[in-house]
Picture 1: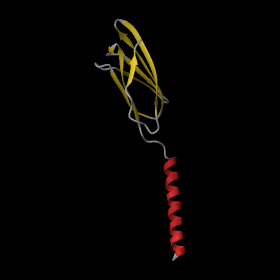
Picture 2: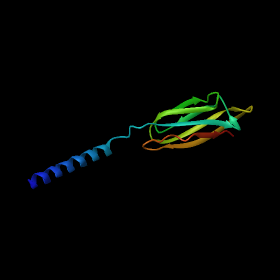
Picture 3: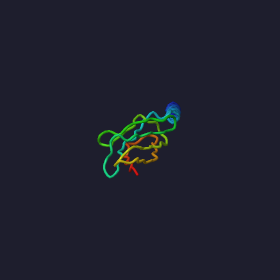
Picture 4: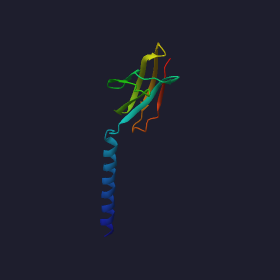
Length: 114
């Protein structure tokens, strides 16, 4: 009787260890996001935003509130470039953002055009 319970406990431990090692080997399935606003004193609409990441480059344009967003991003490091006209002059800004693994809720990114 004692041998059966020890054997059952050992089998359960092996199954638990296999389960844990399988989960650790699985790729991260979470997706992150980058959300922000382009400002030159105040939010600026129609600024071109370019997101460059580990596998691709994605363009966007700020809305009427100067806001932009990129979603469904894999963990990694991204560069966010903003370029456009504000106060009758060409302005730009750059920021680097890292999406953690697993991704967390994005902090708002404020790109200050210069």
